[in-house]
Structures are given as structure tokens and as C-alpha cells.
Length: 404
Ligand SMILES: Nc1ncnc2c1ncn2[C@@H]1O[C@H](COP(=O)(O)OP(=O)(O)O)[C@@H](O)[C@H]1O
Ligand SMILES: [Mg+2]
Figure 1 (cartoon, protein in one colour):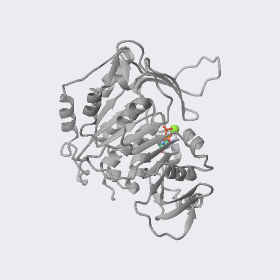
Figure 2 (cartoon, rainbow, N blue to C red):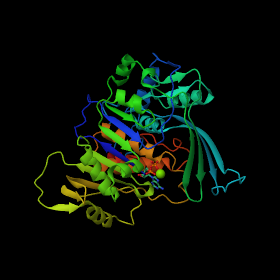
Figure 3 (cartoon, rainbow, N blue to C red):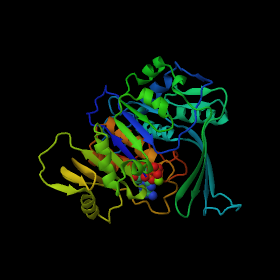
Figure 4 (cartoon, protein in one colour):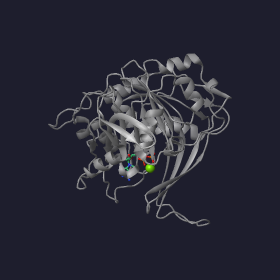
């Protein structure tokens, strides 16, 4: 479960936006390192060709997809990893010796996965992170570049180790258990010069930070627009008694934040959006009751992602306060058990899709089903990235074409 917040100001092409993630453990990063600055941008041209709307035109008579966002450059700062994924029939007991049903070695890490998702959807992601010059690091880099991510701001330490994660995917409970070894040495703000930072931010529409590089994120992200926290942090911070009241508490504590989203695995997500203008709603409504009434409007026969929204209301959380806004439920796709393979990185896929949705100017009613659909695609294959769909994937077409 992971909540996502965003700021109040309208997102314009030239205003940097930041996403922070606190969903994961802090990763260690380093000082004895060299920064690679690639001057060869040929991959960008290649990617632009591959993803231009004309190249994407469907061959049948279905209406064309909407064009890609006009300013598609996003910056991500945070953790990378090499994932070693083993799927098993059932989670082992201590001291067991068992066999895997399938195995995959694949790049991972919150920001690496979210940017890979964004790249496949047609954005131009840039990455600030740190790896070591070891075999894992080289593999991580190769995969990112193959997906068209600009790695020219990546810091590569000569010494140390790249981050590494064992992932046990339990076919029985459909859970993934992660054992993470952070990279070493850890990234510090001095790893990237001010001038490199400015170059990295040049022309960037949105920036996404996960918690793995908080010190670097604070230097880069002076204009925070989106924040991503783990629910554990939110519970401790807000002392709220329910998910909706925790979301409301966050909007009160972060007055510049425009919306907050929490993802709930197979139950989809909940979003609370602050009203831009204070209306004159005289009646207050309890936010837990409002969520309950939205839940009752769910159609249990529908398997595809949907969005259920409230009207603009003055919302109250007992003992916390009131906020004027709208509450949304984004339902997840009901994936048949035989097709649900691995939920590793589902939250990262969701965030990658939200990055795209913001750049494309989608409204919440369109953004939430789109993001849950992208995340559902990612759950159908082993690993965080294998199932990430491309912009032209026919499973996304109805969600991209949908209005608003
Ligand atoms: N079992 C599932 N069935 C359908 N969709 C899922 C499932 N698990 C996750 N998702 C989708 O992925 C999104 C993020 O998943 P979640 O498990 O909350 O993130 P995290 O990766 O942080 O644990 C959910 O909001 C949902 O849309
Ligand atoms: Mg999950």
C-alpha cells in the first residue's frame, strides 16, 4: 500500500513537479565515484521515432490514439536494483530446500521501474541515481538504456556494490517477499555537481523522487509538487484511524498539496483531491461515510478498472479537521487467478502511469483507471518490468481514448 500526493498548482509545461517516495528502505550510496556524462543522444531520436503518433497508428479502423504529451521529459531520482526473482509453489519454511517454478534476473528499484513504465508509455525519462561498476551495475544500466532512459546523469562508483534484491514470489498467496541489499557507498549530494543538476532539470516537466536518495532529493527538489509516502509513515505521522482520514490529515498538513492517492493492491486506490477554490458548501460530510457510500456504488460485475467519484464536498475527519474536495475510488482490474503472476513493482507501474497521466493532462476520472490498468498489465508477468505495457498496447487503448 502506498499513498501518493501531489501539489496544488496547475502543472504547466515549464514548472518542475516533484514526486517523493517513502515507500522503501533507504538505499546506501557513495562518494568515491565518477559521474558519466554521455553526450550521445542518439537514443532519444530513435525513441522519438519509435513512439511518434504516426508510427503508432493502429492498422485497423479503430480511432487513432491521442497524441503523446507535448512536453514529455520527466526526471526521476532514487533507487535502482538488480532483482533476482524466484517464483515458488509455496513460501518455504525455515531450513527448507525447495525448487523454483521460474526464475528471472532483471533490473528493479522504485525509480528504475517507474521510469521504465513512463518510457514505455512514451515519456522521455532522465535518471539521477547511483550504481557501482560491477556486473549488476552494468546489467542495470544496459536495461535502462534499452528502454530509452537517459542515464547520462547516473553516478557510477568505481568501488563498492550495486543494490541487489532477492524476490520470492509465492504462487499460492500471490505475494512477493523482498530481501534488499543496499548499494555501497551511498549516494550523497556532492556526487552530482550543481551544474549537472541544473542540466538534469533543464526542460523537465515533472520530477519523481523515491526515498532512496533523500539528501539528493532535497537538493534537487526545491519545488515539490508530488509526494509519495508509505502508509506506515502516514499512519505514524497523521495518527488517523482510517485510510480516508489519513489522506485528509495529509492535505491539512501539506497545504500546497493538491491531491493524495493511496494504492491498495487488488482493491485499487483512493484519491482525495483538494478543491482549488473554497466553495460555500455549508454541509460537512464524514469522509469515512462518504467512502462507504462510494464503495456501495461499485459494480461487482465489472472486471475492468473504473472510477467512482463524489461531488465537491466539505469533508470532515473526526478529531482531525475539514477539507473541501472530492473523493475518488479507482477500482483495480479483477485479474483471473490463472493470469495473476507477480505483483512486484505494481506500485511503481502505477506511479509511472500517473507521471504519464499528469503530462497528458488527464483528469482523475481518466487517470485512475488508466494507472490501475497499467499496473494490472504489470501483474501478469514475473518481475517488475516484464509486463509493463507500451503506449500502443491494445489493452491501454480504451483508457487512452476515453474522455475526459
Ligand atoms: N492483485 C492485484 N490485482 C489487480 N491489480 C493489482 C493487484 N495488485 C496490485 N494491483 C494494482 O497495482 C496498484 C499498486 O499496487 P500496490 O500493491 O498497492 O502497490 P505496491 O507495489 O506499492 O505494493 C494497485 O492500485 C492496483 O491497481
Ligand atoms: Mg502490493
